[in-house]
Image 1 (cartoon, rainbow, N blue to C red):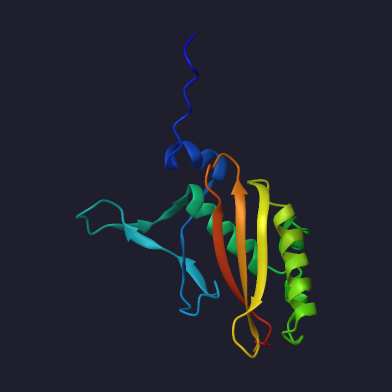
Image 2: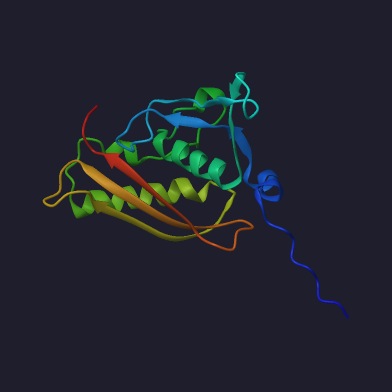
Length: 163
């Protein structure tokens, strides 16, 4: 009896599962995933024509997770998505202490629970970016993604300072 063959996993086969969207450029060099604009690329190699680029597969999921976590929960309620986003923005202005970092972790876990492409959250770590702690924390995620053999690792900075 022949052994079953494993399905080929590449950008084309994973794209329907992980989705497609317009590729965003994050204009801020601070890594804060703010001030995003659509990425424009050449429509064909060597061509002068330019078109909007798209994010496929894991690149799309990374972008979607960054967008979910940078959106305040309830911010899209008027568009029919009252539960989209995260509550960790409620902690802006709080001191960068262990209690605040634990609340950020809780709110991030709640936001990730609503993402159907995540099979399991392997780890979430929220740490002070500097010693002694200032206003920026580092959110480090390790996620098991549907249909992916390797975990997805993502690092997102978050500022507790008022904008």
